Image 1: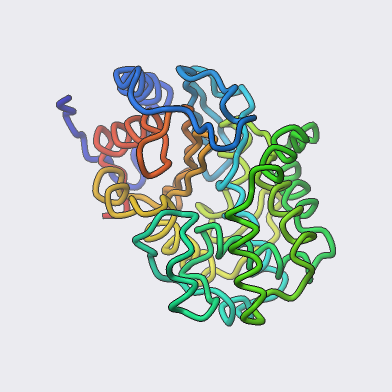
Image 2 (image 1 turned 60 degrees about the vertical axis):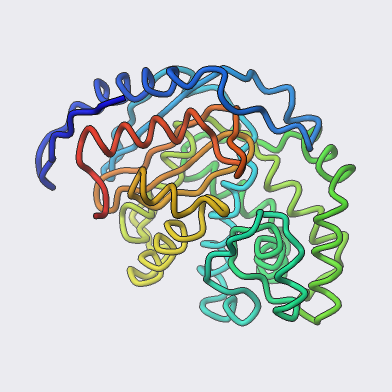
Length: 316
């Protein structure tokens, strides 16, 4: 599909609602491509051909199209929030236990842990997110609760919650995650009890939210670390670095393809959501349950690709 790009300058007005409508059409053109995640049985119930997209501007305006208010399991999108909260509470100490490099392997791979002595390659693969959850649990006493409280506050939606069926399904079928956690612990890189850490990991992955909720909750990354109430969550340099890790590691082993097509930082989840950041302008969240081979939403990728191509808004 050819898209006529119109370069938008920093202060130009953009008809976001119109662009979102066009992006939704691009997403729906992918109908039938990909498959819904079924390795967690509770996720297989998602409506395969649903699609929603929302944009929250840096100053708080919200736009949406399609099923943008429908809640879905945010899954690995939650790893972005565990990361920023761990940094906010504990600073750079976190980086002693997890790296910042792309993995080049599937998100649940065990291979690199063996050769890299229990230090996960980055905080967005499963092994890395388990370490980050462990550190956040040590810092706050309730890692999953800290993520949920943050999402409720920043989205302005106190009804957001954890889906207990999804959390239980993940725990029941989480043998590989348990293997990752035990291997990390065997190298002394897990501070807490393995089962407790995994319970918090499954619970924050099982949070349900809509595209609008996530776009609002991620807005601090478009505001250089400043929360909705004007308080600072991250230093400007920390926000810059989180955005950089999202760009290089946020879409599993397809981060290069995402950077090539979309050109802005993004974090995906196997529930079908992708949260993306336009620094100083806006955050976007697109959702479609059908996934490609790397575990990223086919429809959301197409929509975000259309948005940045049509507007010329990217970091490049």
